[in-house]
Image (cartoon, rainbow, N blue to C red; front, side):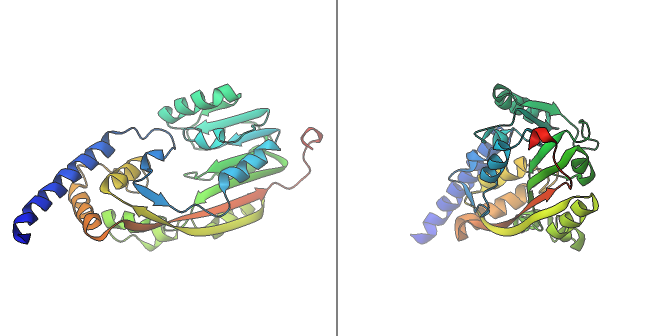
Length: 272
């Protein structure tokens, strides 16, 4: 009896693989909203609560800039925005999405290449924020901050989700493993003339509950496995699907760090 059920189980697993992958490969990955993964993947959240802490700082700012806003979802979550609020985004679909979301709130979205220089005057903002920037251009942040201004950012840390990345790419180099080190972020911030007032790092458990969640994640977070497509990695996806079905969720660990840095000097009277 057990022998006769094995082919059916295998066939059902293959059919489930095709369905999950097709669905995840077809859904839009615009913006920076991961709600499609609800019930399909889990990730612990950092203890510091970035969105809440960002909103508190925005409520007290006069002019704020959000760098690499994505679809604007995180910035839009703040109950109060400063009188002058600007966001930058390089990817046109995200820029359009962010503009539609933020314009009714009085915020302006600027299309930007994510390469220096930032398209703003010196000392233009008393608060600069950024969640998960691809690159942090510290000299530019220091330039656009007003004296006494603050940079507040949650960033991806060392070896984030490398369990999944190495499943597809194989062992990574020591240089790749050492990138995005929060200690280096401190050094770079200080080299740009900023004073680091807070620096915290955490590793957080992630679980991918089905192969569809893996496909969606790698399509959306494009720097994890550069050039990822279902077709290019079909054998690895099939193997991982079987592993999840037999052993349970695929476990990885994201790395996050929080950094806050202040530009020396006294803010203009209008910002006090």
